Image (cartoon, rainbow, N blue to C red; front, side, top):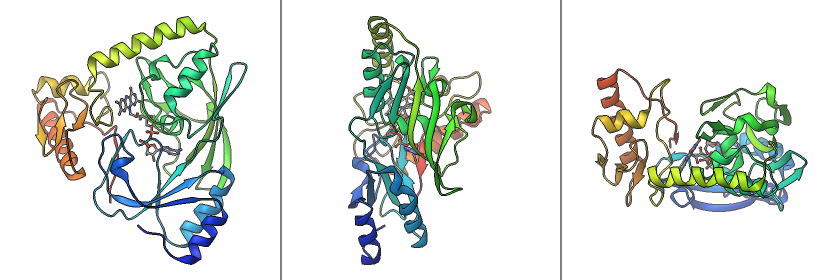
Length: 302
Ligand SMILES: Cc1cc2nc3c(=O)[nH]c(=O)nc-3n(C[C@H](O)[C@H](O)[C@H](O)COP(=O)(O)OP(=O)(O)OC[C@H]3O[C@@H](n4cnc5c(N)ncnc54)[C@H](O)[C@@H]3O)c2cc1C
């Protein structure tokens, strides 16, 4: 979708929004898949209510992009624009055990910054790409921990009230790759309350998690992490592996040989290829195990 009406371009510029026309989402997602649309980059949180009002009034649909590491975006010209926050400088400020973090902050850098100041708990998240906002939205987690455990407060834009609001941690439910945020809530900032731990101890935990990832995941390849959520008490990757589906492909979309729940783009896979692979694997698992796998990857249809 293109924004080229001067009636819109003027107000966008006044709000300090940077417009990147015809952005290729294949270059902004870790899967390397996705068509083209205008990208709006937001520097000031307080401009968001007015920006969204402007888009709504002009019937322009939108989606929120973090680091693009959990997304499968459709091919071709896309019928919505994409909004992305620009991280401020600095994007993490510490106050005792509290880390005040902007949603646009890089998750890995946030974990290491806190670790260097003797704040731990998030060791498992090292190696999870993307932003802190995306991690909050997805309740990202690994190796027995999840980010939601440490959330004290979240600042977000609520589409339902058209206002920026603050929620305390206990008002939000964080479950396995699921949160009680509405789909049109935009995460803006978070306060994490982290346990004190000596840096050396945190570093040991980080190294262990890094090693586990390196030995089990196709880290050099284009992927979106796990495609499916694990069903209760089972492992999606194990089921796919047991069915001998590693290496199964549609075009350049392929079930990783290293980790059966990672689907990789080995060249120029299209969203169509990847969706066909997902549908085929889901059907085979359903037939063999009677389990309907649910997507962990977020699909943006055109
Ligand atoms: C190699 C690899 C390993 C991975 N390992 C893990 C893992 O161990 N554990 C895990 O949980 N995940 C893992 N992932 C998946 C992914 O990294 C996480 O889900 C990550 O938290 C997504 O963050 P993001 O900023 O990239 O979000 P995006 O991919 O940009 O977006 C994901 C969803 O969040 C929404 N979103 C993003 N930012 C905002 C915002 N500010 N406000 C509102 N909504 C927003 C988007 O609209 C979309 O619905 C892995 C991915 C890769 C490629």
